[in-house]
Structures are given as structure tokens and as C-alpha cells.
Length: 276
Image 1 (cartoon, helix red, strand yellow):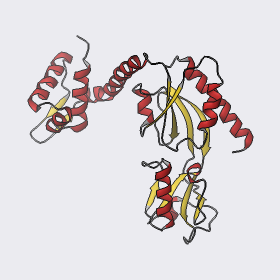
Image 2 (spheres, rainbow, N blue to C red):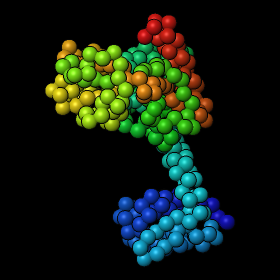
Image 3 (cartoon, rainbow, N blue to C red):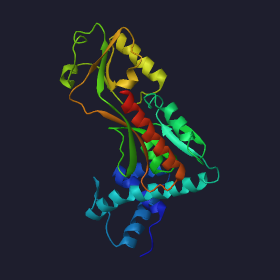
Image 4 (spheres, rainbow, N blue to C red):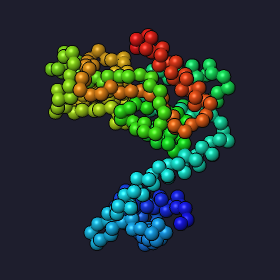
């Protein structure tokens, strides 16, 4: 059997995602007959049916479910290889992060990294899905919060553990409590980290809405500092702590990535010693 082509995997993955040939064709920018033909050719090459088709529905067969699990990783690997090859012409270490998503540790991390010998220049880029940027080769390392970021298949160095806090107006009836659980926030217009907020302007806007009584929020404590006088931040006891971590692809052999990981470890130890 010939090796599968990237185009075939992309076509299959889109149909598997949509379970509708018409919608998948629109996403791919091709006609539905051309897509149907490509999938039939793929099925003939593999010798299995990938989809059960009726006039009412498209569903994955057992073989299709297997390929649906395997195809995304294969596509990510091809994309990553392409991007890393293109980036090799301008050597640098790309660190991805969410705006404001460093808990104030980035300056110390960069300073410690730049003390290492023979490292590449570091470039900080911003993105919403940093884990995907790593997997697709757009970044060499990233600052992630887990949960909710998916660190599966990545190596990590923990920088900071943060218990979540609820941020409420200081005048709120439960703002005087020493701790809360999520049930105490039932019925509130709740913003839970992360849902797009992270840039300083976004945090400032969120804090203003909380002060006006329009929202309450559950955030890592570092995102609440400095806290406005008209707000209260109260520990939430029934949610797991968020871990701020430096992450990089498990297969990385880059000396500069290794130097960044060492720098991250040094910064983390300093935080522990200082009690922050």
C-alpha cells in the first residue's frame, strides 16, 4: 500500500470533524463531488470503509474512528516539520505566551536564559493556543497554564502553582468570607480563566466590570495583582490549582531550549526560596 498523502488526511479529518460532506467541502474550498471522490479513492487504497453514509447521516466506521484518532497527530507532525525547516534559516528561540500570562516571571526567566552560553536570541510571541503553536513548530517553548492547557506529549518545567481566587466587588454580600466554593457563586455572571482574557487591557476591563457588579471572576491570583481597592479576592477551595509551566516538545534536541529549561528551573527555585 502506498503511503497516505497529507492532502488525503486533511480531507478525511475535515469530513470526520463535520460528519457532513457539504460542510466539509465548504471548509476545504473544494466541490462536494471532488471531496466525495477523494474519500472513495482513499477508502479503496486502504481497503476499508471509513464512513457509513445514508441519506440522513454520515458516521465513522470502526476503521474511520481509528484514522480519526491518528490523523491529527500525523498532520501536526508534517506541519511542524515544514515550519521548523523554514524557520531554520533565521535561527532564534521563539517563546510563546498569552499576554499577561507569565505571572510576572518573564523578565527573570529571560535574564537567566541570556546568562547561558551560546544561546540563540529569544523572541517572545503571543497567541491564544500556545500548546498548538508548539506542536505545529511555530514556537520552540511556551508558557502554559495547566489546567486548562493540554500539555500531553510535551516536556514541562513548573514555575508557579497558584490557587484560584474569586474576584468580587468589595460590597458583595459574600466578599467578607475567608474562602469560597464554586457553589457559592451559583447564579453569578461568572468569568472563569482562561476565556480570552489575559492581556493587561482585558484584565483591566474585566476588573472594571466586576467593580460595577456586572461580573464575578475566578482567576489565578497573579492576574489579580495589584487588586483594586473596590474589589475582593477570595480563595476558591474546590478548584484545582493552576500550574504555570514552561513547556517544549518532548523530542526537542535544541541546546537553547535546554538552556531555557535550566533558566526556568532556576527561576522556579528562586520563587520557592522567596516564598512567592
